Length: 107
Image 1 (cartoon, rainbow, N blue to C red):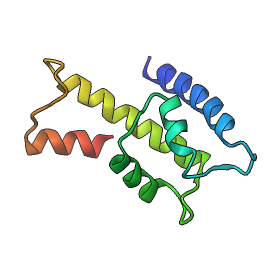
Image 2: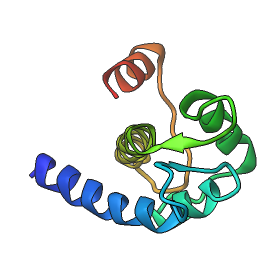
Image 3: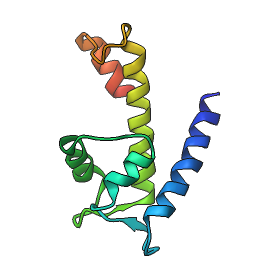
Image 4: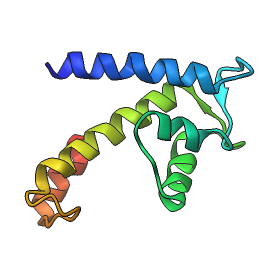
């Protein structure tokens, strides 16, 4: 079930990537990345988005397909883990060091 979910997401995200790689260069520019992430279901804050660009984009702020998919897979896993831990669905979680390490090291 997990693999099917992942595979379906990757196919969906591939279509989104192709839509935003308008010049067919194999990368999406930093100016179009926020819309590409929103289309994939991840409306990110500017601060979080800047962190993602620093980690997954090249020095010009462009992101290739592999990094786009890798980032979305990680975001999806982290969001799923957060929702699992957010027992009362209030948008906050409380974790101890052990839980934090398990969450971040596994993803």
